[in-house]
Length: 361
Image 1 (cartoon, one colour):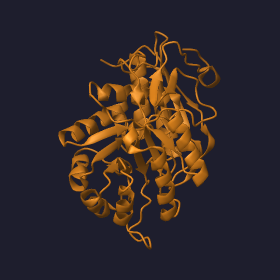
Image 2 (cartoon, rainbow, N blue to C red):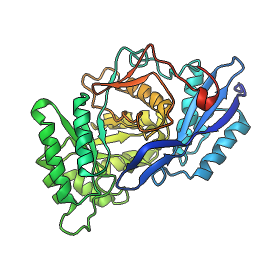
Image 3 (cartoon, rainbow, N blue to C red):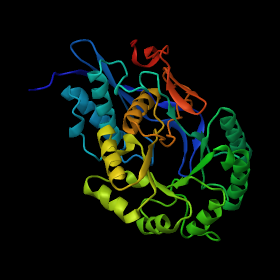
Image 4 (tube, helix red, strand yellow):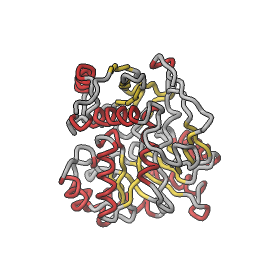
């Protein structure tokens, strides 16, 4: 049976950071973002978010805009027809379809989290900045109740990073239940003078680090395999998952043997693809957590709901990377809130799409 033709429009809404967000790759000031608004004959609207992190997403802006125009022309939300080479578009179409099927209420998955009764533990994120600023961020996150702190590394001289990490660990001791995660975004070089990647990891191990994401470039599979095998700090793969499809995924994990994988649905092709990664990780005895890729509250809400469903009845799930909703000056007001290191959906909260999408929920 041919599916009902939908009225689809695309709204461009670049997300503006309150403060430039530094990583070891780049400095982000604006994030290209488009919303899919799909309406059916019953007046329901499904929303999907397509946004890019320039330099990380495999799609270009031109490719995204061409694919989104194709949706408008077709009047269909057939996300399985979107090629895996356009993961952010595939994610957005799948998200819009799930929202429409759920009645257009921003409830994609009916879980205790989406009903406001079971929040999700998340990590607090320390963005790269001056040492004083990063220490201030750490202190603020600790005061706000976060027990897992994640910090970017790889741009400061390594000896200086060791100094400030030592201070953070003193502020957030293991004995008080604090975990420290690091994210290198591929910045450790096997050719850096003075410190090899393994020497860096050995120096970091004294701080009892929970994990380090992507110490080397995804292109350096040999180096990553060596680190995963011998590192005293557990290795998590993030960027290495981008662009891996079908049998390539198992081959990658069997080659590298990481301790963790980090799932960003909009970078790996949506929720169906994320489910496949989860199933593979669990089959291979690997742990995982989910992370938003700097989406607006619309995308963050969808990812959080998928995460809650994927966690299911896990007794003590890992803290998730879903605390990015406060980074933008033009975000969409939503029922999402963060309290004491947990992401909540407030039952009395409301969505306000009026300034961006010209309608009320």
